[in-house]
Length: 167
Image 1 (tube, rainbow, N blue to C red):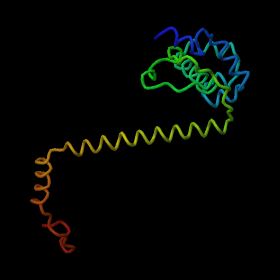
Image 2 (image 1 turned 60 degrees about the horizontal axis):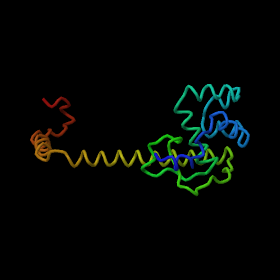
Image 3 (image 1 turned 180 degrees about the vertical axis):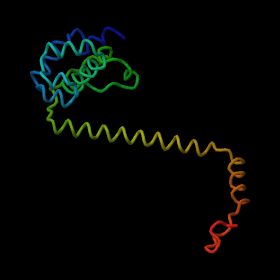
């Protein structure tokens, strides 16, 4: 990545402690817990304890950095080419500046999470349906015919109540 793009990243040169302190001062522990679901933000929250967790757990640090970039600094979402990169590796065009932090409430976070879960479920259902339709399209027509013919050949005798064992 070019150094020019990286220098326009609000995370460039920012320590995790500074990032966390800014988020706690603006949002507070309850909002951070609602947004990230990190227990260290709910049970005995402290900067020191949270930093220890974030330093040991890379996925949590990446999630918090994304939250910082896209909710707190309100930078544009990554494009398809940068989506797979970590937040610290992404860059922004020169002239794009951070905006004021997004106002969040626990209710707004829960609504956003519900929408995301619904969208995820819809994508999963679409994948499942397309997979099933591909399976049905790929069935062998001759094999299906043979199964249908075998069922037709074995016509079951009608049930006779006076002869329950069909003997």
